[in-house]
Image 1 (cartoon, rainbow, N blue to C red):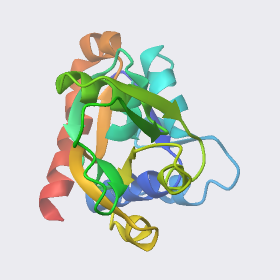
Image 2: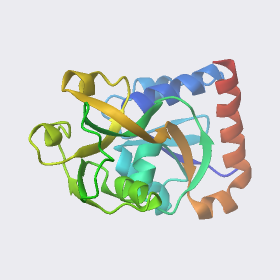
Image 3: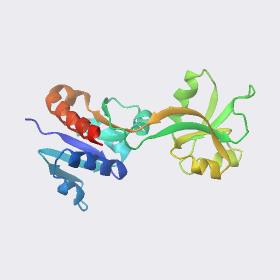
Image 4: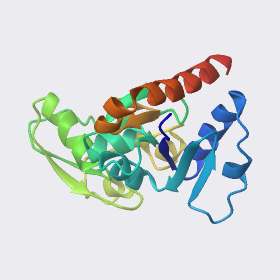
Length: 209
């Protein structure tokens, strides 16, 4: 049986994935007690730990066969990988938001939108056939409408508390987001049986949740 190498996004997605594996009956002590190790092995599979954007890169280039990453990262990265399974956890959404009562879609002037996710925002407005100016912001994107830099923002929204506390409101949902199991296209052909077995293991664990 061919060994799989699986890249996990450090942090919450990593923890949730380990919980799924434990629910499937696997001993995940090497993953939980890895210390500063960046690679650990359980059940004949090698797990590596990286930041979300790097997980997608490792899978795209085939140094990892599989990866667990948020749909938000996949949408913005736009890489050549296969989505194998929606894991469901880490659920939130991309949303368009603006100052409360500002009527974002009113008028004919070109709107300015601030975001950490310019590709996601660009595709969203292209689908609407709307011409917008997109400004990339790395920090607290909610500041942009407050400082009159932008008419609206496209950002990840979980509870909406930060938006409300800063006088913003959701105008429209752009896309729903959750963690996904992704695969390298070549690995999916060469290690299909192993990948489907691992995916099936996670699917059964999700059913038990």
